Every structure is written in C-alpha cells, then in structure tokens.
Amino acid sequence: MFAATVLGRAVTRATTRSRATPVGVITLSKRLYHENIVEHYENPRNVGSLDKNDDNVGTGLVGAPACGDVMKLQILVNDDGTIMESKFKTFGCGSAIASSSVATEWIKGKHVEEVLSIKNTDIAAHLKLPPVKLHCSMLAEDAIAAAVKDWKQKKALKESAAENVQLA
Image (tube, rainbow, N blue to C red; front, top):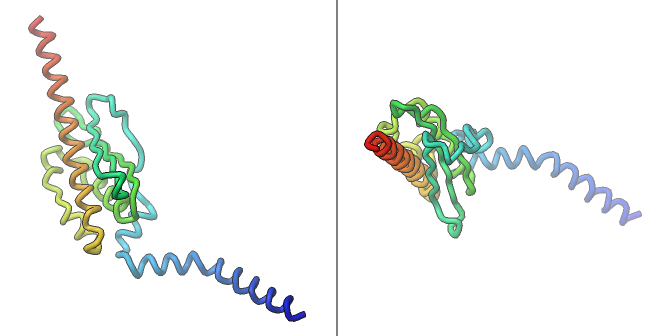
C-alpha cells in the first residue's frame, strides 16, 4: 500500500511537471533573453536557401564549426543592385538564429552598398543581446559582407565574360 501511494504521488508530480514544463521554459527564456530574441528564435524569418549557382545570388558562409556557430546568408540581387530576397541557414544558439533572422529582414529591399552599413552593434542593440552573445551579431554582419562580396565577384566575372564575347 505504501509503495502504491508513493508511486501514485511520483506519477502525479511527473505529469504535473510535464504539463508545466513548456510554460516554465518559455518563462525562463523570456527572463534570460529579451522578447526580440525569443520572437526571432521561435519565429525566424527567411529560413531557407537560394540557388548558389545563380549569378544573381551572393552567398556568405561565416563562423567555425569548432566554436559551434555557422551562418549561411544568401541574397538575390536585381540588375540595379537591390536585394530582392534574402535567406539564411544557421547552426548555432538562439541568439545566432535571431541575429540571422533580423539581418535578412533588414537587408531586403535595400541596395547592396547600403546593407554594408549594417553593423553588429545595430543588430545587438535591436535584439538586446547579452554581452556573451555579441559574437552572434558579429557573424550576421560578416555574413552580409561575405554575401555582398560573393555577388560582386560573380557580377564582375559575368561582365568580364560579356566583354570577352563582344571582343571576339
């Protein structure tokens, strides 16, 4: 009888905790991280990939698997240099995912030169990143710059090839 009562209490506690856990986790997340981080982590924008072989797509891959955060950010740029679409895939913590999400939102519709002025401090301030997570916003800034650089290199090769065809 005693064992059944103890077991019954243990089962009751376990089922009560399991129902309460999601609320506790969300509450804990909101206490530790600003709501902007939680929102972009739970509902990331622009997750996915673009065709890296497309001449109008620039790809930035930054980070190091050894440290745990890797960010791929891609941009689709039209002929006048405006970013029409942006996508990301990030392997990392919630702050890295949130930083990627914010970055892709901010660069859409802007000229490639304009997005180079987005700094990690802007992203960190918007998300209210804690000091130990500032490297996540640095990755986002680096990914934007790398994607623009890749697109510019593709554009230069395309223009060079077009000139060679005209000369021939």
